Image (cartoon, rainbow, N blue to C red; front, top):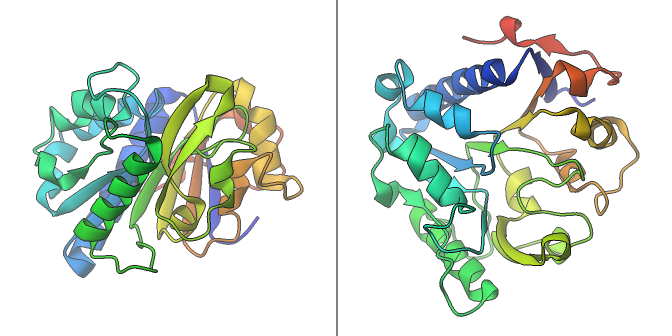
Length: 259
């Protein structure tokens, strides 16, 4: 395992969320002290929900300098903004309703445009404008929250899908046949360009994929989370004890982490 990759074992979902909140706050505060602002890509789905609730409570709700943060979405389902499957809606109902976040600092995906491709293009242009990213360049995100599915996907980079081949764009529309639906996702080059990535992964059904992603032979089309192997930034995996039982590399416990 590369020196910039760590695996941290947590006891349960609550400890995973609390550990993730400590990491978020520390990196956020350090980055703002250094450069005056902080940009972060948030993940959707069920796993990070508790993290967002914790960040909207004491001590983080007053500790974090929220007006210095620009929020991106790592991916979004192509559904209306008020749909229960919307990642933006979940983040709004957990983090944004409790923390003093200006909605103008949240770069959401507009899913009601003419085509999936136009939604992805609009999102890319929004990111370039707000983060001042020139054409032909990629943003350097300070922090990215990610999850991983039992099939080894991360963000909306699913096995065998077209977006895995992307080399230059910031976002892509990606058709996922298993769900017969479109997703808008940040691309692998953007994720690899980040300074810090934090995975939250739990559930015994993900154990086999986790072992392949971290220790198996390279097969990015089959296990897209492997696309983050070899990146220069720091990558931490927060995993529960069931999912980490068969890993070979050294694993630290969350109690040894930064508080």
